[in-house]
Image (cartoon, rainbow, N blue to C red):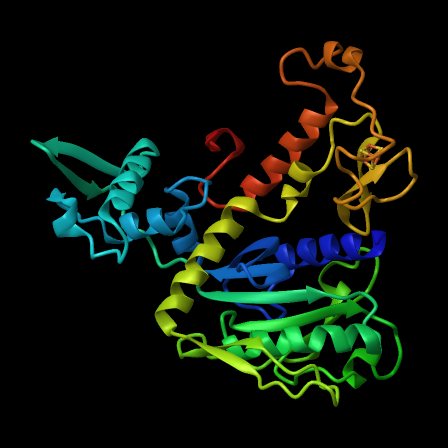
Length: 352
Ligand code: SF4
């Protein structure tokens, strides 16, 4: 288990510094364990133009959910009654009013009352900051059985076309033909082979290029499919995903990626445990547990961990009088690194 989590962090760190594999004038936002209700990807790379990313930063580091996006994307440049300005949302207007109040509280639109009517105007146009969405599955040991489990998921990704590209990242073996190329995977999925150890840009090679998926066209959601055995005679079931739904989902996913980044794993772990350390490993600062003498996973490093011991109170009194102990400092360190990846923001500007 250690290896999958560690591998995932290595891929995220590499993508943040070196994506895309060939040189292009792109900024990226990298996140992990994000997707839709039905599909979560290990690593997500949001490619964007640097100027558009800087414009997005004006809306603050927190994500804009679908209701807030509806408001900020359509808020007018001049004062107008919200029902005149915003398109019919397709759900009750009271939810729109709530979203307008939230947007106003966050300072991303302006509002005023005229009698009983709420008027609004935008502070800035919401930029079209998402250029491409790239999904990466991390499978350090891509043997035949792992490939069999992964292939149907990738086929679903290809059929839906929500991401522009899907990739599998696997550990390089050094063999003449990487074994991953011999596995039965969808040809539309790219393959990255990753050398363990910090080898900078050269740590990752493109073994197979992916096909560009048609994100602007209708997609197919595979809801159910026969399991391929002789006993399963059921028909596959499909749903249609229209381009507007896909575009909205891509924006929402990108917003969540923008908020979370890939270092947010500390939020779900216990840096307040006395055994928690951040130690460099293969070029990435990774959680390390001194009680277990290993790079622990997020699932292991939880409140239920039998080895958990809180930071001794004395740690908080020695040089950590206000900001909390080393655990809080680790969270701040990761938050600072996360903020530096988003132009226009620094750690202090993070909203609570
Ligand atoms: S002892 Fe448990 S809670 Fe503490 S750092 Fe190790 S894994 Fe995390």
